[in-house]
Length: 243
Image 1 (cartoon, rainbow, N blue to C red):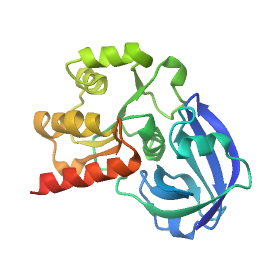
Image 2 (cartoon, rainbow, N blue to C red):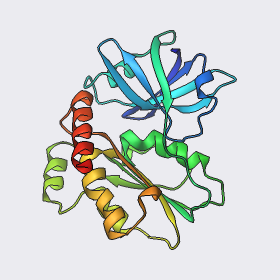
Image 3 (tube, helix red, strand yellow):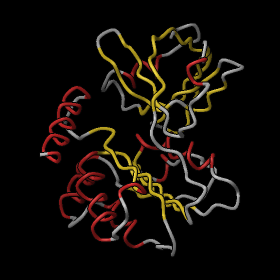
Image 4 (spheres, helix red, strand yellow):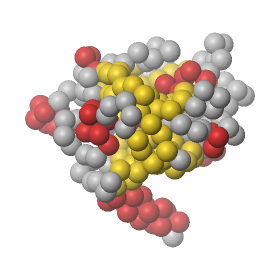
């Protein structure tokens, strides 16, 4: 399908929201809060969470992490103008909050922020949720429909040195030290692959003993790799775990 840009806005210093219009008939049966679309750029395909789709109105939004001129989609979003057109495939998806869960745990970084926002919006008022989101610092916090524990990693060399000295990722520490509620928990844990797959996933499945069906966990990106390289890494990981 083709989507046309209608407006853009800054959600936070490093998050740009792009509003689109188009024929969203393919969204009619989508109930996942992590619904995603594949955006076709001239030389690459990138995957992003689709937000607030309105099939009748033909509107949907995508939020892009922007770090200057780095990457493909971020610079495009920062420069997008009404009338710009993208070819889009989808939507896909796999997660939606289960109303039967006693509480919900949502964990991620900037890349997962749109999907976490969508999940929080979908929860009924009486539902209990705990959300932890890692960002650069206080000035990078975004408005969300529920209270969030923000994990500030800092920036530049100082942040890299601090991370190197940590015995575990700061996001895992925040979850470990946070309130763990009784009852059945459903988890949505997405973000940087090393953090979510090699730190948070073992914590939830092994330490906490949660059933796999209650844990949606996946890397959205991996530090030091392009999306193409990241997809290769994910395929290798699946093959290794399936061996």
